Length: 157
Image 1 (cartoon, rainbow, N blue to C red):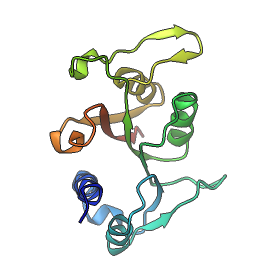
Image 2 (cartoon, rainbow, N blue to C red):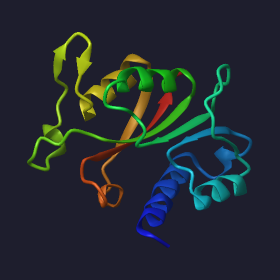
Image 3 (cartoon, rainbow, N blue to C red):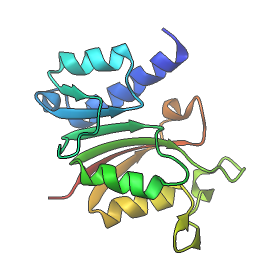
């Protein structure tokens, strides 16, 4: 198994453990950037319905978005995905300000329309869109790129 496949296995196990194996049965899941054979086969074993396209009028039980937010339009993309689901798993690479401290990745507004992709700015959007979230700090999730962050978020009822 390659390093990336091992990494995907770690991520997927964390997601399954967060929700529970039983939770996945008959759930509609959109996979973005997380489509290797192991991931798809494991979710199918749990009887999940896997979708690979963001259909216009479909609401997903879960969206798993791995490293697909663009730098230029990330806020709109994140808000779009939050509007399409009740649960979002997000992993993205953030700006690293150089001293390897996660707390130094800060919410900084350049102007009204340009916000740095950072831990705090993402969590600000989760809160604004009424999502609870947990940010995982496990070193295994950051073993490839120390500037990646990993969240599991759920819409408040």
